[in-house]
Length: 411
Image (cartoon, rainbow, N blue to C red; front, side, top):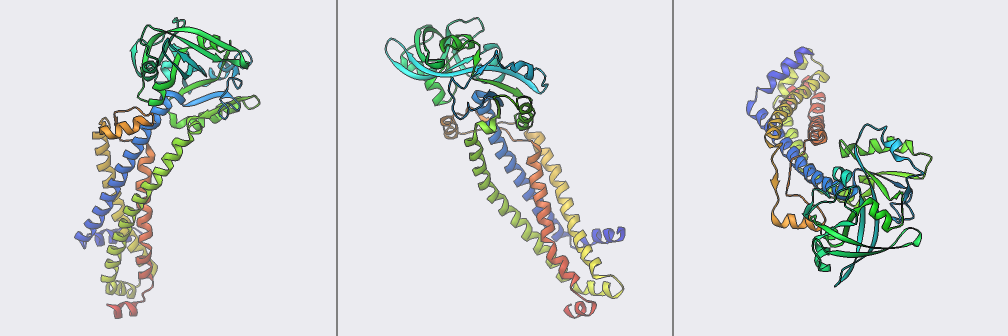
């Protein structure tokens, strides 16, 4: 085997130009696929992080059926379900915050509008969502801000109110109980999402519980972990703790199926591009390897006549190609590592049109970073390696089919 490897290494450099051409094609395509895959993943991560961080959270704990029918009836009674007894024992939970979400009529002296009312724990919510990091005119809520609220900037404009004004909120609360109260505007939220800014009102959890006649009840608990992409593993662990109760645990992927479907559709389009590049690599390898075999038919005939078996020659051709591919992949890894070290902190700014498009879908970010997750590197390298091996099948088998006499005649 060692002799074959040495012979293959010598043969690789017999035609230096052809070998360098093959290696360069593999390196170029691998780098292009990796960078494209990294940028695509970086775009997804920016959008998903924004969506997760602003509203959904990485993992939600709520009453069974709440996701299908998000009503106040499907809420959690904290006196019956000691959620903290479960969450406190899970060391992968970095932060958690309770919420109460409902709807109501929001009125000022001059106008009225329907809106989503979110009760939060100000001290904890800022660790699990972007409410505190959204642009707020005025001040953010504090734990002691009784009957003070934040409202969307567009909603404030529609109601013709500003910071310091008082508005009335009318709701149909738990079990059809009517709720009404007056609240002072402490700040205006400019999240970048048109829908949220047009119809969102945020208050303390205690005030929301009073408004909806739901003392000691919440609609869901939001959890934040060290990595949102590990949420399915953590959720499965948590589900086991609530297996015999009416509590449901869902990940952000389950809560936002539209986002995952959009990603899958976009992935399909990108894989067409990747497939095209991989086919180019395959044809380049197939062409150069076949040419190398055809030019060396006489050599193969002589080698067989002195005792080398056909399968040994096939293995020789395969090892030659494997050396080229491995050299190309190693060189690609070195170049890509250098590129990502240089680009890891670079934020690529988006043009104004793209920002407006993302904003219309509720995503708020100024630029995109290249992703460095392992799957970004695994797909290009594995796919190039497999395509290279597949492209070597025919040339290797062609050598196997020659006898010494046939090879000499062909030459």
